[in-house]
Amino acid sequence: VALAVRIDVAARVSFLVRTQGAAGLVHFMENIHGTVSITNLATGKSFTNVVTFVSKDMKVTDNGDGTLTVVSVVNGNFKTYGPDGSLLYRDTGQQRSVALIDHGGTPTDPGDDELIDFEIVKDTGWVFAEGRDFCTDFRTLTS
Image (tube, rainbow, N blue to C red; front, side, top):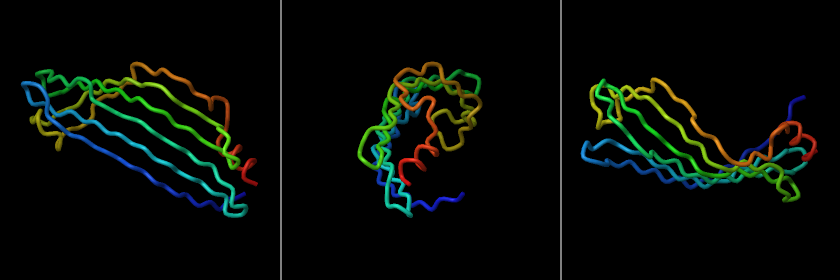
């Protein structure tokens, strides 16, 4: 059965690109704060998702073979509130990843880079939504 919903998004995003170290390799950082409200149009009841996170390249290494290794970390949280304002889901913690990038012959210009491999090497935190189904909960709580 189809369900008509409205999705409202408000976000503040900061994105920083800078060179670092003697080799002048590019590092990225982004900071996101946002709210996404999903409203059941038949009832006017909503779920509200609040997200806050910072993603940052911790180390960029030129491997000398046309590739870069990028070690990144993401810290943040994602919370979902029900129609009555109660906290339903919470996912908070830290994720570390390693990416292997083909730098296209220009290690200081990310414009021609291509992702070769990506691996999450550490994922810690608290996942309050495990075992829950968002769609089922949304239908039940907003009907």
